[in-house]
Amino acid sequence: MKCLSLLFASLCLMVSSLQADSYSELTKDFSFGKADIQSMSVLTFGPEGLLFVGDANAGKVFAIDLKDRVQNTSKEGFSLENIEAKLASLLGTTPQGVVIHDFAVNPISQNIYLAVSRSDATQLGFWKLPNDLGAATILLKINPKGEISEVSLDAISFDSAEVPKLIEPGQQTWRKSDMRTESITDIAYAEGKLYVTGLSNEEFASNLRILDFPFTDKSQASSLEVWHIAHGKSETEAPIRTLLPYKFNGETHILASYTCTPFVSFSVKDLEDGKHLKVKTLAEFGFSNMPIDIIRYRRDDKDYILMSNTSKALIKIDPNDIPDAENIERKLEDGEYTVGLEHDVLSRVGITHIDNYNSENVLVLQRMPNGLLNLRTYANGWL
Image 1: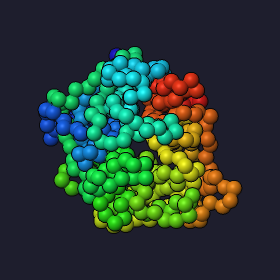
Image 2: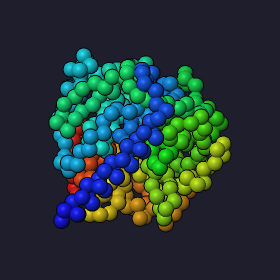
Image 3: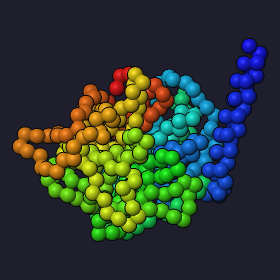
């Protein structure tokens, strides 16, 4: 028994040493000082608890070392009611003046990080959209006890990279907002690659950029074409709204969705720098809708894909159905609302942003029937 204890201790030390080496390698080129972030469009976590920030205004992505690497193995849930009122008191505004741009959960510590600003906003379903890029965005941390604190970016360890082929500010979308806000619509990390979606300055404006991490001066950009089933036509200007790298038979694919709401899949190996790719449309999940977040979670030792939306309840997909799903290139017929890939629409309404909280729970931002905005978890077994 003593020998087994010594062996276990040695293995723990070995794992700890490997993690330390990985952390040092990833952050060796980081600078210390003020991270000059102009906007926080989207957030996601990468390896070793490093936070990635997509900054559409500056046209950059940032990697931030939050020094938040104390392991939390809890499988408990989380609940914080009326979060807008709590944030309003910190921002010096009313709950109606609070805009939550995105949140992400540190998978190591289970601390929640929110990109928040005080700004006038227009209402689109349950989702608030900032009118412009001018409102200052701050980064807040919420620990598992529900305590809220601001994260200073004035003295922090970070690195950044330019996003190529940016659309210039000034052009307006149909929502009367600056198209530069859509130069970075989502980011996702997988196996040393940061995937960045959004509009470019090219003729085929919808673009997917791939940046190596740790960052270098090299990047790859591909224009994308999607068949919008609801519109009955191909489009090259609509950006991916949310994406998820996912492996099928050892090969990385991108699962993604656009406004109105075609769901697509394509292999990363088919992407080439400077080349155009027509993606495979597998489903239409309903027009007059915008997807917000897509995640992978596990239930009963099985993977599921979960997607939140502006005007629909949560959409649940079995990834095993994706590889053999047919490509659809036709217009919705009279009376049709959804077609293609089988899916469940879960009875969880008013949910915007989602992320994995821990191995047993998914964190959601949910507008309740009484109008209050709650930050809470749902157990994987209930989804």
